[in-house]
Image (cartoon, rainbow, N blue to C red; front, side, top):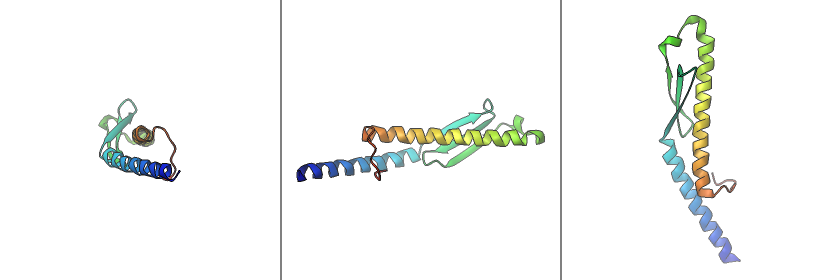
Length: 104
């Protein structure tokens, strides 16, 4: 019984190490999402940090500021979701879909 527990602990430690490596690698990756037919694009890294926001000059008009603000929010939220999905997908590869509280 004690041997099994030691094996489980070693496996969990290996998984945690792999997850930390994945988190580091994904932190360096970028995802992008756009709204308004590509008029506003947000680029986010794997750490869920906004790296860049691109706005097509054709969108900038005093009367369209509210729409532009909504498109920026939409692009950023979509990019953040894509980055989160990417992280979850990579972690699932390590854990086999197990929910291991406190491991990541």
